[in-house]
Image (cartoon, rainbow, N blue to C red; front, side, top):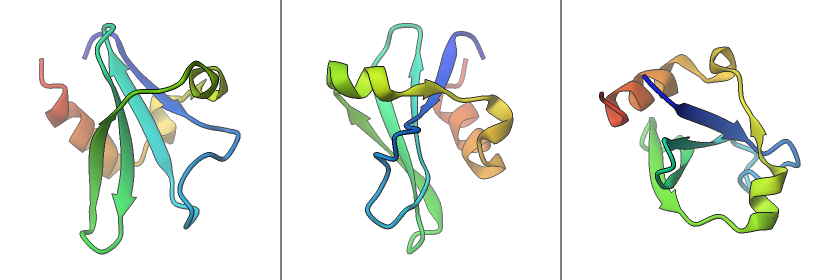
Length: 80
């Protein structure tokens, strides 16, 4: 998968329930926010517009820190 970036917000601007949130962007495309929904038992994505302040707070995440189920979902979402 080329030019996929995965971000987290180390400042803690995740969810109110403390769940993990990841952001992704590929090749200058839109940003997606990924959140695990306990009730559905699945990772859900929503396309988001991020403010410049939020963008500055995001940190690039290492692929190994991304949960395996989300890795699989990302591979399917960004199918080459």
